[in-house]
Length: 444
Image 1: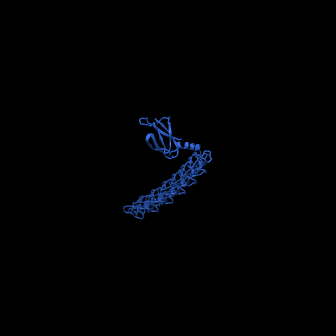
Image 2: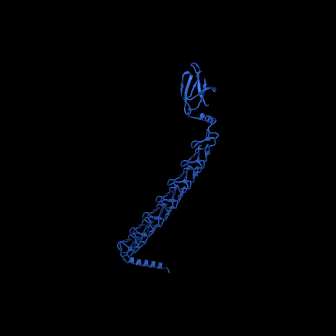
Image 3: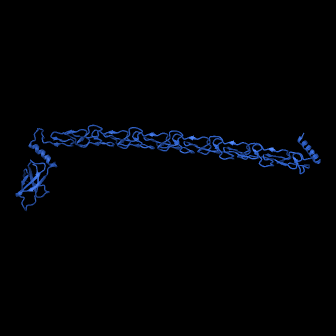
């Protein structure tokens, strides 16, 4: 059976009878005089009583969706009716909520929340990694690199702390910089490798540490400094490389801040040495920091290694050349009267019999006069009758032969006669008008 059809027929029959008898308008209907004929209240309006002359508009927060309504309906949560006489509700738009039934206005979601679509009764907390900085937002914003959002319902991002970084969008946590890296300022999206000369030993570092004296850090990204190896040194902080010791210096241990000069008696021949070398016998190094040893000069010797001083040849011995480690005794017939002599002097007693004979004296003086720096003629004087007089330095008891020539460059000198102490001689041919004459002495 069609109940709707029977009900409609009954309603129509009742309405006809009612209006025909000029009865008051029933609820849901109205007329200008409150009596039939009546018209149904239109959507947005309702008539709650009999005999109404005007329909009542739905209140804000309420609506009437059909005709002949006797009551108004509450707007559901998530919708609202901002004006009187509304025939339907309006869904809360994105970014807004209608939190309860019968709302006549919508509420923007607070910062830290969002409303993603239409008809929201409640706001959604912003998830970790995102934020909503202002009210009325329909979607959260992802945290940008360098920032993170650790909690639900956040309205702002948190910058990464110094020592940390955030490399991606939408992060809910910050990442500590690894050992060998650092982040010196907030809100960094990547860590910086420690530069040459510096290192970062621990994760989460906000600053790089300079390599200490005696150490270095080569290249980028060092998590520790390297001690300078033997033969090299690092005199300052923050060095990217160690310095090789120069010749004359050495570095015996690792981690050194300065080189050590070679000690007297030692030398260092090359750069980057970790040890010093002793001067060999026959050589010496008189001062520190020498890069080579010095051969002993003639007259001196060095008997052993690592010497800083020379030993003069003692009296009775000599050293004829360079680089000697022993002195040579004087041979028979020669002598060395003072220390440090490079050669011997021929002695007067050539046959070592304890007596200097005339022959030995002649041989000795023959060897002496050509090389003596102390023998010279002085105080020349002309006497009467062609007699001449002179003096000899450093000689007072020997007779000399006097030679003469009229041409100084000649090699043909003529014997004039002996000169006796006080070294006087006569030349009768030296008269006025004679050619100029030159004299020299000879021994014997």
